Length: 317
Image (cartoon, rainbow, N blue to C red):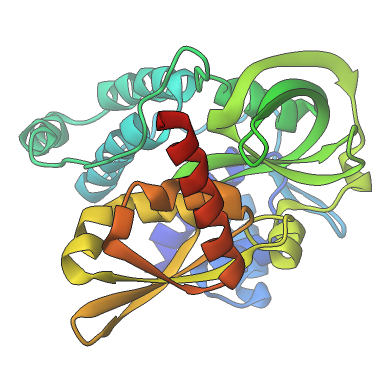
């Protein structure tokens, strides 16, 4: 990237945040802090009102705005891909907001870029096998959760715990959201359990955005949580099963909902490894594959399967 393009990009970056640290600019463009200082000085000399706070970062003086941004063809294509992903991976609230934003973005595109997007529209597809959304778990709380994170507002949840199939009410202080294992998760400090918890957002039955604030500086960051706990703060059990290659193909994407980590071919079979916190829930899923799978470890899972089979036998006989 030449310097003119970099200066324009820095200006856009400054307009995108209230305060931008010099280190953020350096990391983005892979340049030294000394070069950042020279670039910012060049913008100031060109008449751009860039202010600085010692030890904090740079900012644009209130009231200064760039003219409407023009997107390149590649940027427009990336945005279209994002829209397609949002249709499948976002929740109801975010899909509506993203669609509205995309209409505004398309409005400022040049005619050639609009034609280019229209030619791509039917040639980008996202195939997803996520479970359908039910009225019981409406999956429409993303916008409220994002508002809570931005304003540091406590949330009240009606949450269905999958491992024991109970509904409970929680007051939580959100620290972040993350997409993993095929679904969105809310990471928050739970006031009831007095600890950090991982709430699957497709298990939230109801949500209320309260007017009570919390101090996020008293909680760890999302990055610190992920570094410390990984995907969940609930201990996960190592599970290994063996299945024919045909069965492994039929299992498909459903394995990702049960902590799938890896698989390897062993002769005519596939050995699949999982990390999952609840043997009961994993066993119920395993029942759907009948005698087409074999449990390698742990032995407790085999015991759990025997109990589940006996329960079914008693029910039907």
